[in-house]
Length: 255
Image (cartoon, rainbow, N blue to C red; front, side, top):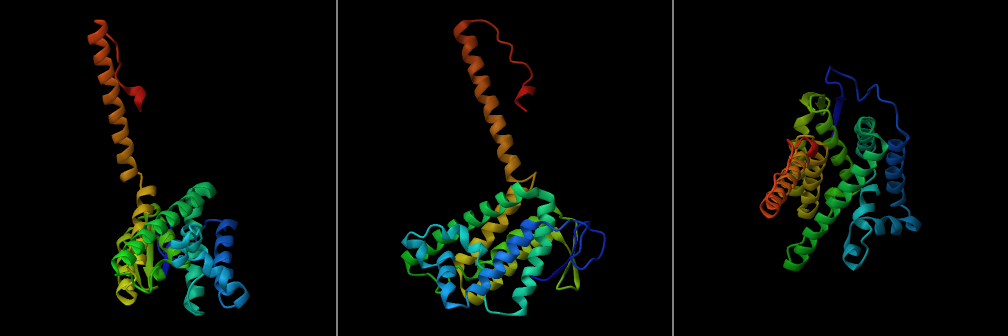
């Protein structure tokens, strides 16, 4: 995914912003680059393979649902280096908005959840005999990290302008459905259904966790309404049993 980013939504800037360079994002990009290089050397290739999502997951290598996203993936190409640069651009702005704790919590939560979901889809495919030989191809390494960072940026900076392919200006919020479209195009080429579902899950979960008016708020409101209903029912029972009035106030203390 190529794009020119303006986090403030006010025009150009070839990926530049006023946000400082966080060492966490530098370390993340460096880890992906190093593990990418390690796959080309026999002495380290086995270690990288053991940390990626693969058949070992169904033989007890459960750590793969967490580690796969940090293992650089794919052939040696300029696109890989460009993908790391884009990962840095988006990751820097997401980090500056969330801070260290929320940034890593988001990253680990989404990668793990997407890995588990994709693993379940792949397992079902193995049982039914419909599994693709290219399982997890679409979501390995930097592909998953880019998906999460772009989705997070699109949620946090929805009105920012991104020059898609360095040419077409697009509001950041439109990258949420665009990521699904890109993932689907990847599925058509690879038939990696598990990877496609994993990427869709990553986009949806990232939006849900970061969108203040999304499902997270709805769940909170539903929980508050349920608490109020339970308390009102208890007060009603107390009135019936003890035959005296109970002052329940206006309920403001529940918020």
